[in-house]
Amino acid sequence: MPAASKEKTKKQIPLRVSASLYNELAQWAEDDFRSINGQIEFLLTECVKHRKKKNRDIPEK
Image (cartoon, rainbow, N blue to C red; front, top):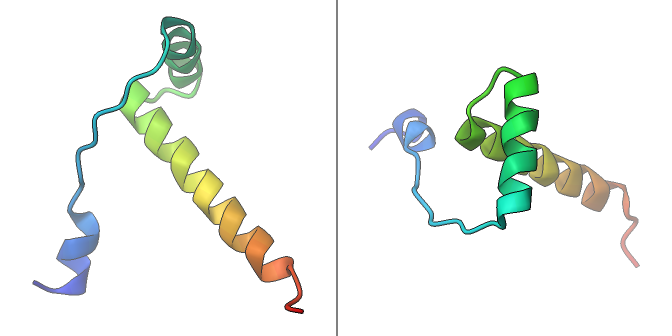
């Protein structure tokens, strides 16, 4: 399978969140014109980007 099609393959994961967190995410998603699933994926992607950037900025000992 070419790398491009592997990248487009999405994995499903079960996710349990509290009702209050779900409601907050639902409102945030609505504000950003995204589905809840899309909002969660967006937020996780941003967190991973931030983590990678943060780790690049830490000098090695």
